[in-house]
Length: 361
Image 1: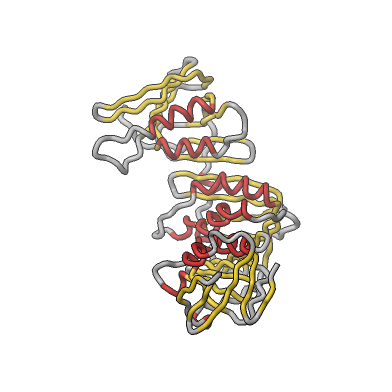
Image 2: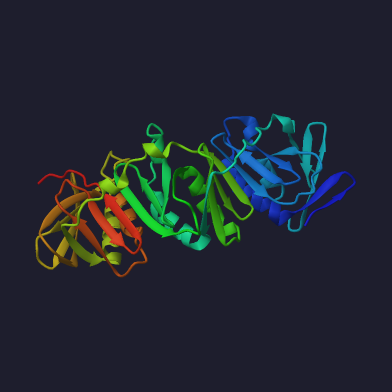
């Protein structure tokens, strides 16, 4: 609810707090004006020049103005009901807390977006699937395509795929009447969306593309991002190996063992993620072990398996891989072929592939 009195604007504190919290993820601290959010009659928007996020709401603002996001969050932190916004002489005040501002015309203008394809998704199902593939999105800017998630619609089924070249997470879900399309959406956009979705109540998520940009809409939140060329994304279907043999083990037990391995940092190697070695010799047990200099750890777990195998993995990546199928039963099956070829973990609608690491025999 908003009202306007004596040239000032009075906004509901809770709504403005929510908008500022969400848009803070899209500000750019390196460029001062981009640490501000643009407030007009239709809502609040922020940009880091890669993405532009808009939180739609009725503000009652007659003349657009810029709010320093960090300072504004602090100014209204204790407000419970309403926030009074006033401007004068290149200053803006929130409940009498005055702060510097810029001319609103200095803020970037939203680019035009006329979608050619639109994907409509059930929000709870989408966020559940999205959280399963996000761990595999690359942060290596030298390979820009891999910093995105691939959205591929075929015959009404959406496939989400993410890879950083060491692991590949793939999942599927139903769409609502979407035409066949393939597009990339930045992982940074989707991470911010996941971080914000519990603050917004909406039943559906809409993702559209005009060939150059993707627009993600969830309730009052709209995120417009540049789209990389989907044709440059790896053919993930060719990456998934055949399932030749596997080992089935208790999910909770192997995760506990991997978490222990992850905590054992080799001395002087603080950025090194410890390798976890899985050794199955054909009986009813598998060992999860780690050894480096004078540190060692071994955990023996009950299991069911096919052929004997000894293979090493990045402990953190393997734990993420298993957690990507976290609600699909009490056990997990890791399929392997050779110690140097990718392993595959399947569960429900999720398929995860993980590259091993070379270990001493």
